[in-house]
Image (cartoon, rainbow, N blue to C red; front, top):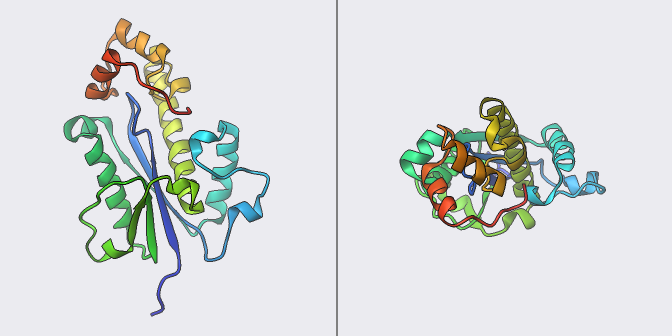
Amino acid sequence: MSEPLLICGLDEAGRGALAGALVAAMVAFPPNFRLTEKFPDLPFRDSKKMTAKQRAEAVRYIYEWAALVEIDIVEVADINAHGIAWANRSLFEALIWRPFEAAQYIVDGNLKLGNLGRKAPRVRCIVRADEQFEAVAAASIVAKVRRDRLMAELHAQYPHYGWDRNRGYGTPEHLAALRKYGVTPQHRRQFVATALRNPPRLPGL
């Protein structure tokens, strides 16, 4: 059997949020395929640097042309029980162990992943990989679009917190709502306690 040529990119969305699940995605494109060449007018990069309209268009092309798109989610209850670092590692490890063989698995960030078995030599964790590898940028977009959709759905249940706009991050609006209404089952308790003491710097939403 020939060596697999596909490179999988992995990234997550929602790591720094005060509420909502952590979502990760894994994307691979056919060998020698480049979305940036096929759609030169659409910027494929870190999802937080794209507009919602650009992400919606990009994710449609990703699903159309990718050889593989996989998503996994860790819910808030598990984040509260085990911590965000555990959640982040668990998502990437679970995605890498999906029944799919790639030449490489490139993970955004500097996590120390374990439980990779025979796949370990093919896994690389790289800071700002989404700026260097198209598959990782695509995974960032897929994860961000899925998580934004989840937060919009949760907004219907908890409208006071503005999750359709702030996506669960610690905006002044969200922090004010926390002080007025308290926490919900969808809040990350330790994150909320820290944010109320020291309001966070916000990424692009």
